[in-house]
Length: 295
Image (cartoon, rainbow, N blue to C red):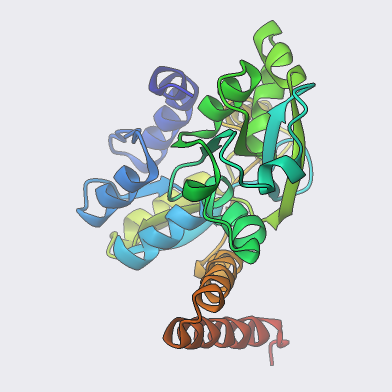
């Protein structure tokens, strides 16, 4: 997705937000996830829509706090990381995992949950595979670039996710249909939670309330205005936003720690294993506390 297309799709939402909170809202479109994290860290942005892993980094390093999440516009919440190949190419998962340096492979942004973290955690690390040593070339790009590269035969295989593919399908253009018709999925991850929206922890509480009062009712209801708002949300590929907090990141923290545990075992690194096991134990305690009924 280009910055120009993102600006066009987001403009009506940004305008509605500015009117609702009574002050100008300026949108920033980063070229990669690290740029978004750093922008929040240095207080150049106040809130943003992140992937799960980049959102986790925004919370850890950028002074952020999860306050909402997106909602799948075309089905049940959540999405899957996938590996795609060109249809009819003969490239299979077995050939990908053969690691014979004959294939060109596309990874996602290093801070992408589905483009990097999930395939490393669930596919490559458990098999002691280092993509850099496995393929002829490895290139990192966003999901759209990887999808078009595989469809056009410029990459043999690449990571992607079902949400990105669904977004392209929603466009219902000749190019979208041709692109999706040229690829097939050879691997899927376990389900990944929807993406978080993060604001700075030090944001003025009065401003936080204005933002929440605008965002959570947006597109909800059966009025003509709600229908107009839902049409805007469809352009940015979500249903009405849902309140959330930092516990939304527990699954991605678990993925991260699991990957670190596998890598530690692969290296026989006792210290790394101990750190990963401690992280998993803490995550388990937090999940158990959330599961307890309120008293």
